[in-house]
Figure 1 (tube, rainbow, N blue to C red):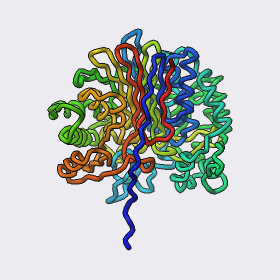
Figure 2: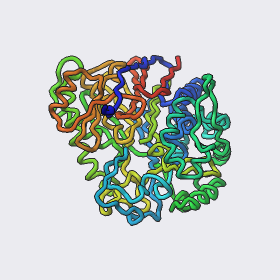
Figure 3: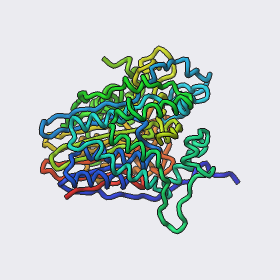
Figure 4: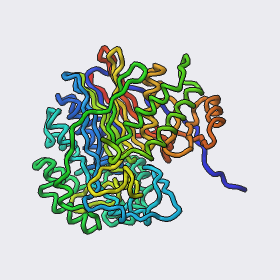
Length: 524
């Protein structure tokens, strides 16, 4: 008997969209969504709620994001009728050089970042040399001081209390830790936290929720409440962070932390089918999103009804063309995931699309024992080959996959969208934009509509619940295809979320399954 190569799943789940008028939060974990809701309910604005939501995610979803990472935030300021961008992506250590990452001859990586050549020992993917200088705290503090109404100290409090209680150990957390246990056990700090008795935690058999306390992270939050981001970059936490990083073998020094700056800038803009599109800047997937939308618009003739086979073929061609340019030509030198995303709208009309990340699941796997911070593996974003626009140079910021996006239609309605899922992020946002702007799908239909993924290779991955005629057309058109379920694990597709505000002010939000924790909460 020949064993099957895979097990097919045929279940389908829809999470209903939520409506409201007073405000709305969408995130990848219900506890984080509830935190953001409470901030809105207490009078905070969308920026306040987004920051509090993100800080809570760093506790309850540590494999995705945290203080040791970075991000991008797009903000629509209703009173000023302006979209601004906060940039706080990760940065190569000042002492980093391409020779630290020698190539393994004849091999390519299968990472979720980019299809760069493989580096010996995967030292750009995990371990001390994979860590880039984090920008997270500088970024959220800048957003708050410029556009928020509450202090970082106030907004840290819910995350600090959750860290004292601990990471909720439900079936999904157990699955995540178990899935990456082989990598975590390579590093003592991560082993001590997540594999304390040598094994991953197990959910309670009686269904009671248990917790994995994070006391050192809670102490770090308390220090940040009194010192702000300076506590991390130039304060009492800095010697502890550098001591642990140095002991692990990282090249990051106190100078790296002291010189880091987040920035306020203008987003990229374009027009697509009657929408103004605002997306993140040159070092994100934003330029690729704009390029893909332009390619699609130039080559697709709109047909009545929902997207048909021709539309999906046009989307696949746009993604294939765009990704080739993205990998070859984009990066800091060319400009003049595990990731998580947050969308927030408040009652005053402000909108936030906020992506934060530590890169791969559990980042570098380096957990700093003194501060309880899990560090990123942002060096994975660089092309390890020297001489290119995204090659490794000390102090350079890499090309990344984040793609927070806002859209405004001619009738004055808005949407805020984003996703988690590494290089699969921008294809998902691209398709959501097509569904909403080109085919005028309602939000519930758009968020659950079957998608494809084309993200850096010739392979076209097709959701198995697309109509059979569309699947047949795609498989006949493209030489390399596969049909896969949108399953909990593995994730063949990104997990997007979206909030839409119509011209009357009515909000509607949705999260794509299969993430079991993703949720939307409304304020009436």
